[in-house]
Length: 110
Length: 113
Image (cartoon, rainbow over all chains, first blue to last red; front, top):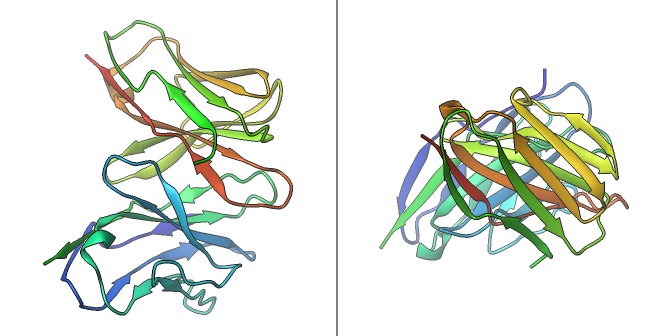
């Protein structure tokens, strides 16, 4: 079965500290993986997708097929990074149906 | 922002009443989706559409129906609302031309009392 697990409901760090938001997935084929972010009172927006391998707002994520993980990392957290982060999997071919993890709230303290 | 709007943004309704939520897009995207967002569950797919009059069920479709009579509109109907359907509902759209990014609406907060 396809599944995405984000083990941390809340991650609290101080400004300038490194951040790692964990995401593990279960999928038998070659998945497309994404990180979406939801800032307070705003809509979900795409942060990263593994296929593009780009860095957005200082965040990076590497797909590790051996560990079935797609952890989101940032070396120095900023207060404006405080938000809800969702890892998502698209294993549906071209229908675009996304399977989301439970979400992790990142709180960056001053 | 992608041209996607949801209405209403907030609604309180009584148990047993029908409710319809609307998603409207101006992007001419082929795929449209309805998700619900609940604490501890993230977002879960309710129904989706891959074209006019073409819809299919998602993970949590019981108690919901959808219709898509025009490319730009995707309606979600709760035939007889229950308290378990209290949630935040998000519509999303996606271009079927190889771009896999989904664009989300601002959400509808529905409370069933």
